[in-house]
Amino acid sequence: MDRAADAGPVLDTMVEITRPPVHRGAGVIEGEVIHVDGFGNLITSGLQLTVGGPYRYVRNPLYLAIALAITGQGLLLSRPVLLVYAAVFLAAFMAFVHWYEEPSLARRFGDQYETYRKQVPGWWPRLPRRAP
Image (cartoon, rainbow, N blue to C red; front, side, top):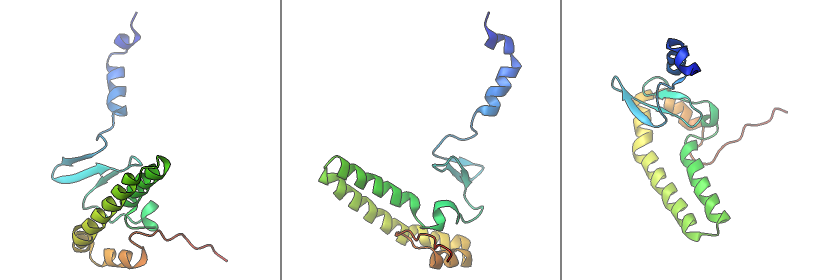
């Protein structure tokens, strides 16, 4: 006897409830660009400036993490070509951030982004200070 067949609508409902609404990656819902970050959080464009989590220490944590991962692989595997690749990757994303992403965020969020930009470094993480 097949218990799944006996479950009928209950199993269908459970599948619908547990199925994530969006797959990892990018997509469009009613004109809004959306993506799911590495922590599984749904992020939609136009809602609010994200300044918490890793973004409170550095403005570009994902680009930095990718460059560090490539660098780590180069060191672990003793492959200098990966170190060159990491440097090229980081330089390309630094240019992208400088010429496109930051002006776009400044237009969208105005003074809120400018304040955030002045308080949080772009590429070298600032660790929180300990209270005396």
